[in-house]
Length: 429
Ligand SMILES: [Zn+2]
Picture 1: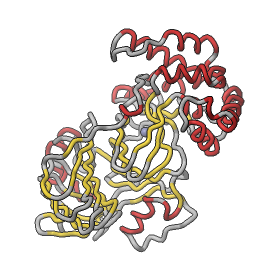
Picture 2 (picture 1 turned 135 degrees about the horizontal axis):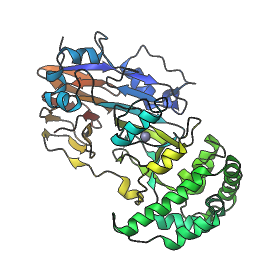
Picture 3 (picture 1 turned 90 degrees about the vertical axis):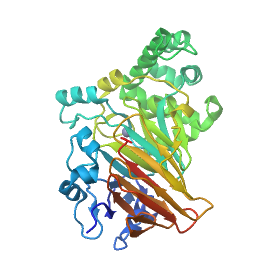
Picture 4 (picture 1 turned 90 degrees about the horizontal axis):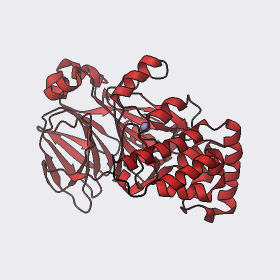
């Protein structure tokens, strides 16, 4: 059997924040790939997992042999020599590739970098089971919204002036200090920038350490304001967002540390964002392709019933404050291919992964891709096509997932005009 190119069956997770029944792209993909799967219309389908993660390992479609076992039979050829050496692996992919279908907000969170990951694990192995970093990248498959990074400081100062509930939680002294002392237009890394970050940290720390009673009282007033005086807010999308997220997590601190302090980021299909280590973020709604380093390291802040590690969270964040447009990635055209399709590469500043996005809008034809240094996983999200490797042609329909070994040239052929694929690979190239 061909072990350098084959179809995969990917498992899924039914977390309660997932979209329900066949409205979920995860359910659509899983059931199209495996027609024996009957979608339960009252159950959430949150995540499709593509890779070698032991929790939900992918298997070869034809014989159900695990991808991990197949790779282990010849890791240097299948994963690529550079990947084996760099990531010290003989069977696992360094990334986990996912589809997420989000109906309800996920917890506001941040991920440690490598050095902090080691510290957290040694201090608290129960809550921090592994010591790796966990960079994440999200690319929208349908319209997506999330919270990502702190808002520009002038915007937060404006909110402190307009929204007395936020001012109440932060306290008059800290609010005044923040609004008076922030430096506008500080250059990144300058002493002004350092001061700005400290001021922001103090505000965030006050919000995160407010008592439950103060948070819930203030949250009720904030929601009332959103209903009755929407013009009090400096962003017209905020009142609706606050009301909606309060229905999902009533009286939660996330209304303050999330909706009021973090950027509300909207992505259209094909736009992506990279979540740097130590940047707070939360997914709110939409279907996305997500790629991450194989790790489970999460520090949570709000919109969650799970453990919140406020002290570590407040001390670990970078307190970067960039406008929402700067949170979006600027993908480049992928040069190592030719033909009818358009391929752009989302290449974050880490080594574990990059994701190629290929579309064949308004055209039908073939694109040829040179082999990559590392192994890759490809999923079709739209339209119908065919993938050919060394004379083997396999049908590619929505939800079909493929493993492609290192150094394997590939032809993608569109059979209709909106054939769309995402391909995650190790970013050694
Ligand atoms: Zn995350």
